[in-house]
Length: 229
Image (cartoon, rainbow, N blue to C red; front, side, top):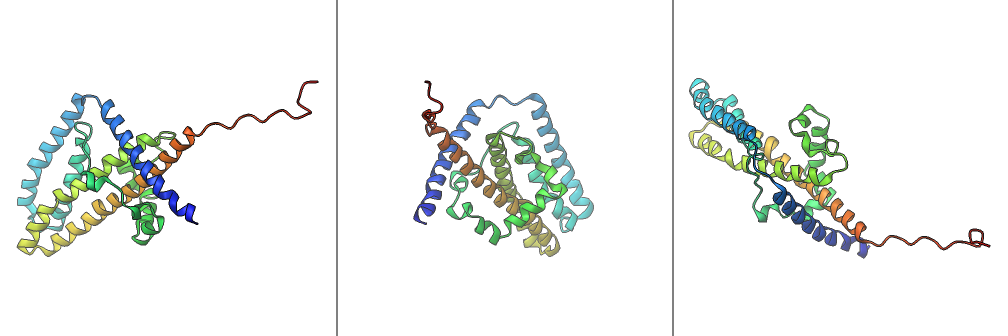
């Protein structure tokens, strides 16, 4: 039992080291953004910047529809930022805690049920690059996309807070409630689910690295039947 308890600690240490190495390799190989990616980012940013004030005038800031849209807009914009400029979460946030490696913790807060729902619903098509079936045999690629999606949900959560504060100040309780629901279902739980996925990928990569360092077993000596006469 003691050996089983000590193993995850080493695995987490190796996983963090593996994660840092993978991150540095990805950053070193990152090329300049393509022109089309910059055009797409500028176009969508302009569309959201122009349309949101008109939508505010048309249906009002207290509208549940406006609350729903304005809370999701940061996530939509950040999705197009990554191809132009990669970003992550702060270092103290990026580091996984011990509890995030435990399936019991994920089950207790509903992450496993949430992950099952994502995998078996059309919502998985919104970000299919974070699934191994999209990149079979390339867990490091999946890990890179998981980190990117995790960072997008993290910053999208904070980008939507000004509306929450504004709605709370003006007493827009319906809009505030809708925005909170979108924050929980669209940012908080996806963020936690991606972190749990990253913990599993980190542990898998660390285990694979340890296995690759182990010397291969030598071939068995020939038996009397195999030995030359």
